[in-house]
Length: 192
Image (tube, rainbow, N blue to C red; front, side):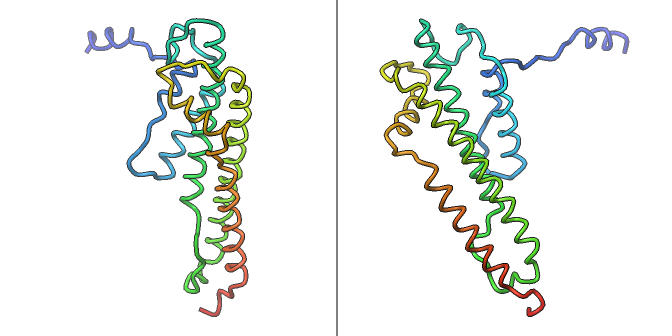
């Protein structure tokens, strides 16, 4: 027992302090439960608050100052884009697409669920706006190619050309929430 205490007393925890370390804790789940989405949101939001690691420890090979700036801008854009996607996914977990007449007894709970979905969709819009700003900041350096983060460069290109536009998706979801909310508010829960 003494040896076990002696050996484990010198073991220290690995401290997560850099964006890249926190970003690597993000992972996709086969099933998207709200608590799993919340876990990924937590790690990605923490990564936005952290400092970048040394360029030697970057997720791509960075050889000069221009590439380093490109990498940081794309990294931040990518994390904000992932957060927008996660918040949309999370909001979809609370979304009610149709207000069925037989749901009238649970009118209050359904309205609360719609409020949660609306709040999460609006948070997705915030991160989508941030992703667009970081993409705009990276726009003048568009002809740099870092092979390891090619998918981030593709996302940047799609944002710049308008082929990736979450505003349209978020607007549609918020409009649907308003429609369904209106139906629920018009229900009389004592009728059913």
